[in-house]
Structure formats: C-alpha cells, structure tokens
Image (cartoon, rainbow, N blue to C red; front, side, top):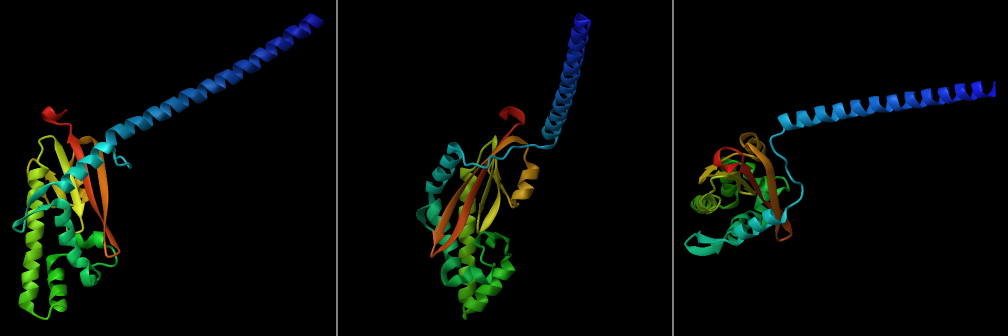
Length: 220
C-alpha cells in the first residue's frame, strides 16, 4: 500500500512538472513569434536609424566644416565666422524678436517679404533697408554655395540647418527642404547627426549637420 501511494505521488508530481514546463514552452514560442513579427515590421517600415548621440566621427566632420575657410564677401573667412556674422545681425537690437518669438532657430521659416517689412520698419531710410537686405541675401548665397562645394559627395547626403536656411546637399546640388522632407527622400541604413551651440549677447542658437550614406549603386 505504501509503495502504491508513493508511485501515485511521484506520477502526480511528474504530471504537474510537465504541465508547468509545457506552459512555459508555450509562453516562450509566443514571445519569440511576437518579437520576430515586430522585427519584421521595423525592418520593412523604417528606412534609417537616427543616433541620439553625436558620434566622434560626425562631430569631427562638423568641426572640420566649421573651420573650413572660403571667400566670404571679398575676404577669407571660416564657416564659423560667416555663420556668426550672418546670424548676429538679427540678434543686434533684438531684430529677430520682431520676426520670431524668442526662438532664433526658427528664423529660417520667415519669408523674405516679412523680413523686408521688418527692415523697413527699423530703418527709416528705405534705400538703406534694401541695401542691408541685399547684403544679407549675398551672405546666405555665398555660404550656401560654399557648402555645395564642400558637402559634395557621390555616396553621402547631407542636411545642414542653422537660423538662416536649411536644406540638403548631395552630389554638388542643394535642395531647399526641411528636415522632415529630407528624411522622406533618403534611402539609407543609418543617419548620423552633429549639433554645435552658438551664443551671442546671451542668445543661443544651433547649427546642425546630418549625414546619411546611400545604400544604392556602388555605395553599398
């Protein structure tokens, strides 16, 4: 009788263990299947991975670009100095506050007609206002043209943004787009970024550089 009871108890114990193990296996396969499905969706729907941290390589690219020199308004200047000279004009006398609300980084979204209107209201001489407007346009054009030459690559697409303009540079061409539009036009497996903070008279703004390698053609 004792042996029979021991045998029944052992059988019950093994049955309970089998049920637990079987239940754990079901949970395991369900979890693996869910993760596999999630990975498939991510692979099919996401075309790039954006790093939240400036890599050493991307930060170095930004610093090299900012220290590059070119002919700016008839004299040699670094990109950094050209940016500061172009943007600081709007900080002097709080001119940017008449164009945007406390966020200098959004100045690129202000159209030319609005800038002309504000300049005419600040400068009593309309001819002076027009001269300053044209000079500012020349600064932006020269800086943009240099970036077209410097960010000219067959395999890498760049997106550059600072308070006066933003756009993409690829194969020596510039496209006037915002960042969201830029992300829709690139087909890459990674997107690196680098930010540098500038400050003048207590007002700060950012210069941003994104770099993406194409996965098409010989760039794979």
